[in-house]
Length: 500
Image 1 (tube, helix red, strand yellow):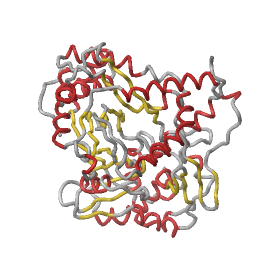
Image 2 (cartoon, helix red, strand yellow; image 1 turned 90 degrees about the horizontal axis):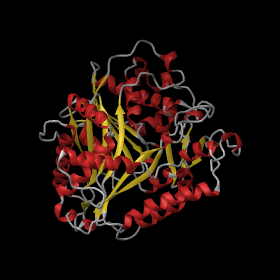
Image 3 (cartoon, rainbow, N blue to C red; image 1 turned 135 degrees about the horizontal axis):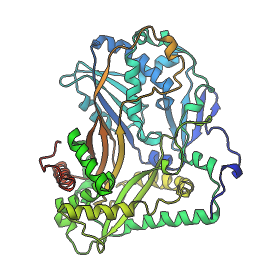
Image 4 (cartoon, rainbow, N blue to C red; image 1 turned 90 degrees about the vertical axis):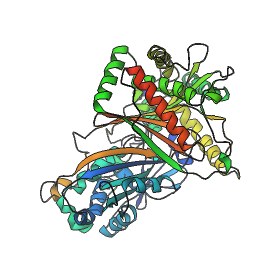
């Protein structure tokens, strides 16, 4: 039965955000609640190339950061409670200066990587920050962002680009006093992010049968956690080990990436499916003692689907963009159906095709969003409670293969709209600032190694995001090299040592 669409749906407010004194507030919904309860942060760091001196950059950085907030107000959002987001409107230049001083520091005599790791390795409820790195002890100058994952999925790159765009403008040397204009509800609400749940509710009014069918899909997905799966063994004493976050990256050169994409297109297999196949086999080969048992049922592969498959996510008609569009997804590859440990290109391609078919089986209904919206408050409370246990949450025997596909980080062809008086206040054209490198990461404190696929300026990369509390660093690096070698073999590249 088809769902009743927008024309018969119940009237909905233009925005979830409402004015409460000098703040705009809204409640968190759906996956936002679950992510907030899991205490996750999104990070990005960029190396920059510019003739500007370090002193010039330091004079500009806080005004550039405040202008970034005007263009992308999500960077000003805070979370006063587990289920609420808030945005304090800056009514005076002093308000803006206090915020910029708190959230846009300068780091000297260090490196971009060291600043990034220092932020990723410490739990914090701090505000979103953008740290300018100048006079580094080695390596280039750059900037490092740190933002709650709650309302931010893959837009960290956009934030970095906007900040560097604003940093390039000479009038930011006037400071915030020279560029300030008050924030108002009317010029901010339509650019603050709406929830995926809200976007869904504006377009769908599901029937009980549709919700029941979506719930059945969700229950099938949850049942996979009870089955024995290929995975990465946890350290035996992990309950007593300290947390230490890592972000390791493997890179394929542009020519290699181009050849890989051409092969996959010709083979009719997506990059995600091919990589999942190499991850599955690579984990089995890297940890044979854990994954050679005939008792293993199969491979439980975990990923994040994107809500854009069901709904438009861009800002429109007074609605803000959906910046946290994740739909938790998983698939099951049964050991009886295909070899889960192939080493030949033919075997890997066969496994990739099985993965391709399985990946979308439980992601056929937009009403999964509605089911998650209903379940999220209970899930979030359970997560909060289990993390507060004296010995921490119960741990699985292995970390399930987990992949997030972050897409292409490309230079923006159009500037972000809605930055207010930006053009009117620019005294001269922008100075040259070029992003020469970009890396993305996050504070992954879950008992899994998250593989993050992305591409920057034609380089193909996969990051390994994990906590050394659960996994040995050298074991993970060995696994990463094994996966890289299998991927090269699958797509016909020369098998060489991975660039870590």
